[in-house]
Image (cartoon, rainbow, N blue to C red; front, side, top):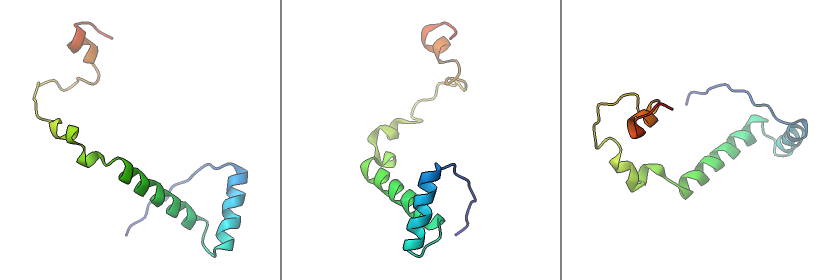
Amino acid sequence: MSYVTTSLKLPQEIMKDLRHKAIQEKKSVSQPVKEAIQQFLTTQRESVDCREDPFNRIIGMAKSGVHDGSVNHDQYLYGRKK
C-alpha cells in the first residue's frame, strides 16, 4: 500500500487529547486519525452508496455536443448569459 503525506490543522485541545489517547492505546498519533477516517468512510458508504444509485445509470445516456454546459448553463437553458 502506498501512502500520501498530508497535514491537518487541529485545535490545540484536540491535538492534546489525540496525543493523550494515542499514548493510552500505545499507538502513533496518526493511527487513531486513520481509523477515524476509515470509520467515517465506511459509515458514509453504508448510508449512501452512489455507485448503486439508479439515477447514476442515466449519466452519459444523451449526447448534446455541449462541452461547456457547466459554465454556460444559463445561456443554454434560458437563452441568456449568467
